[in-house]
Length: 251
Image (spheres, helix red, strand yellow):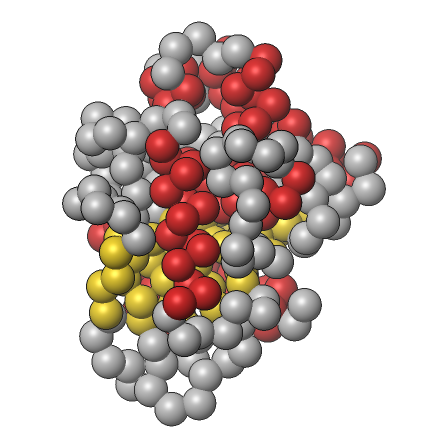
């Protein structure tokens, strides 16, 4: 059993908020941040992550379903990553366990979750630098993890240049592209299907290969569904994530 979520704002914009789902009774250690996808576009919102957050709470986890400004409603670079950072940092004020924080992101949310785990290495003054709450583990569900290749191959049509505010530059790639952040100091689990027709399986495969080559801890789990079965709590694809969470939250 769980109670309904409580909404908390981390800024003045209507999209700067999150919904916190708490379990009833004893809770697992740590907190899970859910970051929805939709190619960073305003047509998609945190309702995509709500079923996952509710399921996590039913299983005894505190889940923070995070909204953010997207392309079309004030988002894009640098506002979207700054919102993700501020939303995660707000957890320090919400009476939840922040010793271990796992970020789960789907599609473009997988990009944002993985990016957030690398905040400690960002230069001073960069969007999201000086983290107050550290992400200590990541699950990227069909994540857009190689922005340069995604832009070159038209993943999401013009999604990457739209997100980055024009043709991607080396400077923005250096700050925004998870492939430029490897190795992270935290474990990354990528779950992806070869049948995915929205974000190619190679996005996860290339990221995991690069992370391991650089000395990072990264794993790729191939799923049997498609792009959207990953965010259906009733599927084996979601079960992969549930089974991995205790280890990721153990620190």
